[in-house]
Image (cartoon, rainbow, N blue to C red; front, side, top):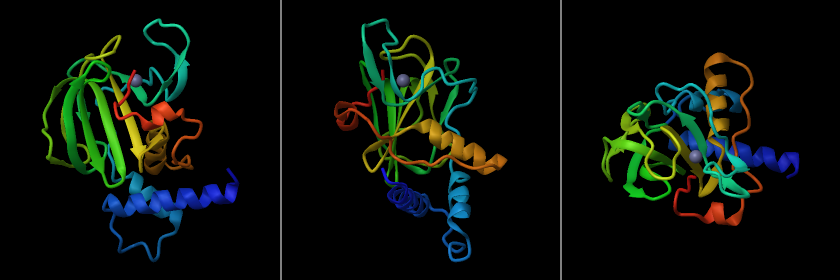
Amino acid sequence: MPVRQGYFMLRKLLLTSALLLGVASAGFATENPQQQQMAMWRQVSFPLDNFTRFSSRFGWRGSPTGGRGHEFHSGLDMPAPTGSYLRAWADGQVVDVSYDSRCGNHVIIVSGEWRSAYCHLSAMAVKVGDFVQAGQVVAAVGSTGRSTGPHLHWTLRYQGQLVDPELVIRAMQAAWKGGSAPEVAPAEDVPETAQQSTVLGDP
Ligand SMILES: [Zn+2]
């Protein structure tokens, strides 16, 4: 995509999100876009206690369960012991708490135009309709569904488009530690099946 078009898309994405996430708007007139973005990335919470590493990144990968060929991984995997707290990434409302054979026990939270799905949970502490705050414990990590060990799978969408959660995590780190934040925008080259999937899709 042309750089300039990309810039405007990014700017729109971040500004819209900032408003929806409830960042104080009073300072907007005097803050530059970079400051506004940094303010937004400090309003959200790292979703996992006991984080150690990313075990499987967003994007194309070989099958984790030994199948042939490649598949599109629609989220980010982070291993953690069963029972580790899952915390809501952003303020929002719980719209689904259920089970399916791929994602296992899962929770979906809508935060403005963002939608987070958390898979493979061992237990849930919220129900559909609950309003949650960023950082609030909503569930515990597990290994339910299609999973080879206890981990959190986080699928993140903005306006229905898949976003790599690792970009968000790196932007959050930059907001607290300084340095430049990566551009957070919907992923390109996402296969239509993954983009349209209503199942959260983890593998
Ligand atoms: Zn996964």
